[in-house]
Image (tube, rainbow, N blue to C red; front, side):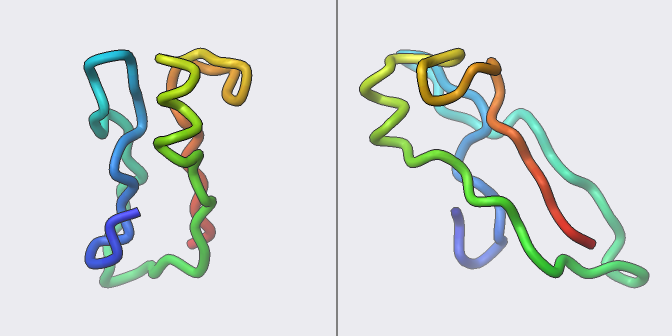
Length: 67
């Protein structure tokens, strides 16, 4: 996670692609995040090469936020 923005460093990965392609959007004037789901460690995913993998059966990493 990026500690300054509370955003994950990536939500999709392949052998040559680690980027954010998924977001949880909300307005800060009416909502604030109470908790965020931890995402898989980049090193775990590097062993698997790309998504889906043995650790993550979906092609994107799940995002979950309690607002």
